[in-house]
Length: 113
Image (cartoon, rainbow, N blue to C red; front, side, top):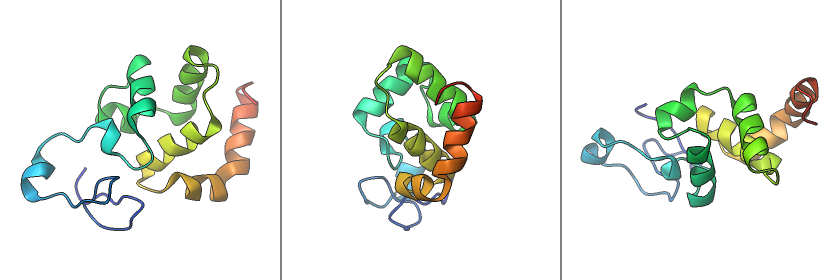
């Protein structure tokens, strides 16, 4: 996805704030480079079958969180916020602040709250 925005607000930036040059944009971006996701969360995602950024973008965040909770029972709700933030190119804290109640209600409907 070109011209995506990280939480820094810059176009074509990685989670560390560095700019992507033209050559880098042609290379695949790994999960670790998405805002809000680091090595630990990326490893957890790979363990439940999310290997590429495309996998993450096409996954339902709630069902993905459900899979993560089954595999890793101590998974924090913050990871769900981070997944949604990565999918929407927004900071996870914005997701938490703006949609926390909606998210909790959906998780309750799924029997996960």
